[in-house]
Length: 302
Image 1 (cartoon, helix red, strand yellow):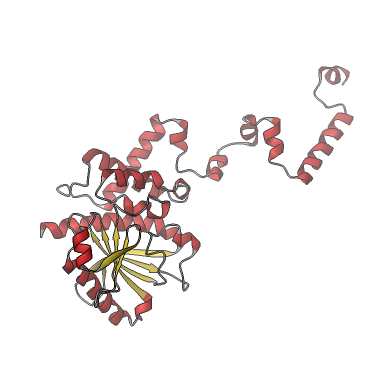
Image 2 (cartoon, helix red, strand yellow):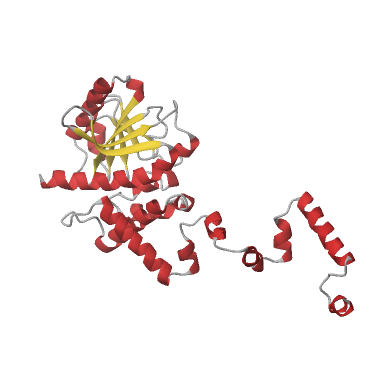
């Protein structure tokens, strides 16, 4: 029972991170989604809201393997503290079958995925017929479980699309690589995501891995991250304070003179097209013809 509670907490944390990341690109993420009228419940369900294929924006935030599938319904069984077992593989296949029956979906519309924080033993993978089709992505042709995709977080490349899931890898260096590969531009689109990632980062730094003896919920992680953001704003460097803000958001609080004050004439001109430069030249010429060039002589003669 204790293991079940820990598993629920972990997939809720991962699911919340994926929800914050994918909400902006029209992908619904829910946790403990019921696949029957009663139990069992799949850990995480990714649902493409529209279209017959993942868009470029969605692919940029979905993990390898999943983003290469045409399926709109992704059923994720997340193993964090537990190792991948034969039962876990069979359970994922069963959930997929039940879900398709209830939702009246075809095989092409769903994809069952087992997401493993730990790296499965090669001997077990060979026993189950799983082969690595791309780094960190394993598939098998064995009957009954051939539809199940296995993702090993420690082996997934540290690319920005894998960053959110790699935050939950069992190896510290892989988690660190996940944090380092996060697309900072995404943070400018979601204050919550930025705070959530900060909260996870600080939690891992303090505990090494999430300690489920303390009830840690997505809400607490987000609250922790918000506090970290406040501390950074109060005592951080200018770069740290501006993290998570888009250029437009930064410029909103600056007046025209403040924006231009830090730019050289060449930098100002570099931002103008040919028509704008000609217009500026015309205005300057008119100003000079009117004796308003700002020189001491013109001021004395005025």
